[in-house]
Image (tube, rainbow over all chains, first blue to last red; front, side):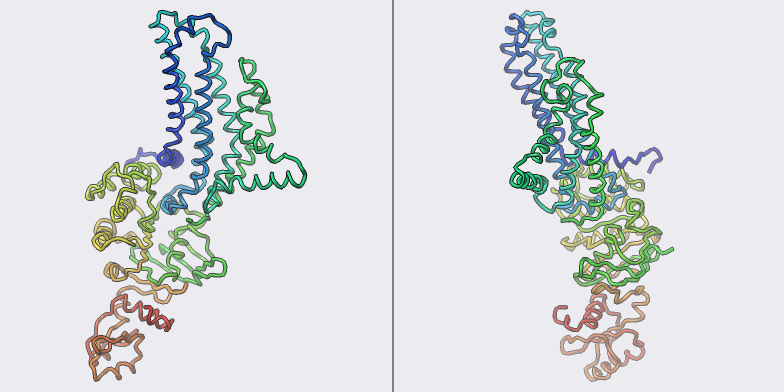
Amino acid sequence: MNGERKIRPFYWSVRRELWEHPAVCFAPAAAAAVGLLGFLVSTLWLARSVAGASPRHDGLMMPYVFTAFAVMMIGFLVSIFYCLSALNNERRDRSIQFWKSLPVSDLTTVLAKAAIPMAVLPVVVMTVILGAQLVMLVLSSLVVLVNGVDPGRLWARVDLRLMWTVLPYGLLINALWLSPVFAWFLLISSWAKRMPFVWALAPWLGLALFERLAFNSTHVIQYMGERLMGGFGEAFSVRGEGKAAIDKFSDIDPVHTFSSPHLWGGLAVAGLLLAVIVRLRRSRDPI
Amino acid sequence: MACIDARGLRKAYGKTVALEGVNLTVEQGRIVGLIGPNGAGKSTALQAILGLIPHEGELTVLGRNPWTAREALMTDVCFIADVAVMPRWMRVWQALDYMDGVHPRFDRAKAEGFLAKTNIKRMSKVRELSKGMTAQLHLALVMAVDAKLLVLDEPTLGLDILYRKQFYDSLLNDYFDGDRTILVSTHQVDEIEHILTDVVFLDEGHVVLDVSMETYEGRFAELLAAPDQAATARSLGPIHERQLFGRSILIFDGVDRERLAPLGEVRTPGLADVFVAKMTATFPGRERAA
């Protein structure tokens, strides 16, 4: 029609995913909204605690930490359920025949779907947390001000600079760490005819049961736990050991994190699984 | 170069053979009807042509191997499977945006023009549209693509007669321009009969008839035999005979109309009748079912 129109299959494939799965944006936002609502009620007592003595752990940071944590957990849950339906729904409702009638390759489609949990959701989570915390900060500053207390006393104790550095760093590491998990769930979604959730977990649980009974050991279940939830520890604790949370800038240790063979091994597995998914999407029939 | 060229096209699902050595050539600018009973292999053939399934034998569509070059091929090929494949969660404006963003040959203004003639609203979701409206939407999207080949697999299945008629009318009036090629498979033979330039009968994975409509008219004749001429007519080797109000209706393949004229009324048989004749000729057991 006109020369300037850009053909961007990847960009529009990602947009398409967000149209089909609005929860990717709305669920983290809803979690933040609940946090904000609770925080709003708590501001009734805020001025008093700011004006009061200033013990080191007076809980003023608590709402910020809890909201961030809740948004991240919701983001993680949405990722898992998104992955399980991403390649299954289009086969179930046969719309895959519509998508395949357009000049968009299976590779582009699969990468766009993988980008949702691995790139889009971390950015959404970060943005939502940032937005919610900003609102909290402005709101509490106003409340404090109205009550005649110097907001500088609040800002001295609610210092978000560290959190706003650790969060993007941690979300990136977490996304990389979880990439083989997402890829595995996407694979099951493109392979299973029904109940992808069961298929995604059953082989691992079966293996764990077998191992426990045959050798009386628990390596499989430990590995599962580490892969599923260890990303948070890897991302948000000192040296990824899950013992002490990062609480100063010098605790951030990208050299240590990015030299972890577990991280790179996981990425390699994710890449391999994605290649298999592309092949599967090419040849699987609608259900 | 032929638009579609298949040589010895074969497809088996496990032990079930869906296509067995199909040879088929479709030239540019034709409207070809692919007709066959359920399980004849029509959908399989179309899926192979669209690069949705791997195949054995040689197959080129617009000079490309559809299985290895699907996304390149889909720039020039459009496909409507049936009304159920539009994603139900999608809104009309999203479909327009998406097509506009991924398809180099999509003309958005044209699609909006087609949609303006319908009752389809921009904000509607596909799930809120009736079957007929979904078909209208899909057709509007497809007709706005400047494609070389349009493949239709039972595009009007489950639509009422008004939508079905409208579907083929807009296809002919607003889309077909003599350069484009259309390949359509359907059960509703009589509805597409008048728009076809060629017809291919498929049965049990084999091509049993492949003729242009001009050849078809010269080749097939239907005789409503005069009561006293029925026996003579039968001796000329009809491929099918049925009774209507006590008179015999016989279908002939390749018998000169001059010879039939004295025996009763001669006309060109409908595709459906020749279809039944051909199917029961190969598999006599089907007579009753057909």
